[in-house]
Image 1 (cartoon, rainbow, N blue to C red):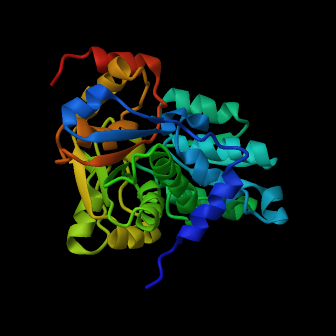
Image 2: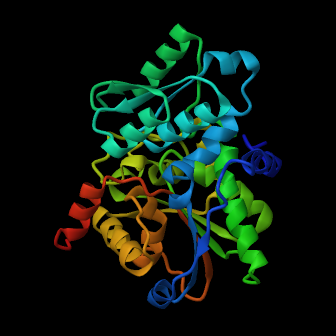
Length: 328
């Protein structure tokens, strides 16, 4: 059965992104290696444009619009990072954008989305259906809906993060990763990264990391069908998804080896590690993959491990409050 995206799709996305996206750094930490007994290679997408990997998928998708689609513009729904990504991509490509965002989204993400020139439509994530709102707006305005993860062009764009990481590991003389840890919400990032890893590092074990309170993909893979869950109560706001996408689940069933979880306390501990030892601001969702390594969720000793650090958008007051709270 053919997958929704191919490695060629990821290479094509890389060509489109090369002039506009940052090739984010691959960072090392002696403290992280000592703590895990592994060689960790962090792909710092918190330093990507808009502060998250989401720019990759959004720009790749919008850049493929027809002239008529560009004139009408894009509509999307997101808790924050995909919203910012679509807003910036639309501005760069000269098209209007409308973003459906939850009322309780981090203020920094809402402000940034508006700052890129997009219209923001707020909704209550506990009582309203963001997908229905997005579809209605698209129909009423003739705009093109760009989902945050369940879209081939979005998935292919996100896969360029792993493409770059694996290329940089090989160029540095380290060899390809033996394991790749990826933050997991709806599955767009891990789908693209898993396809890239399968091609460039066939022996690499691809591991997704969800919030413990929102392990819908872990449940879905265990029974072989998509499971829907109530809104997860977790500080990882970018992974508060209710279910995987049809396209992303098809890729994850085929290409993802394992899904594990991290607790909110482990995410805070990992945020603190990044801030103190690597001088990086990373949001809770962005810490998921690293938490699985640093908190001992996965046994990684003696292996080369790629770690996708997916984003760094967090209000500074919230960041300070989480790091100053007593350890759980």
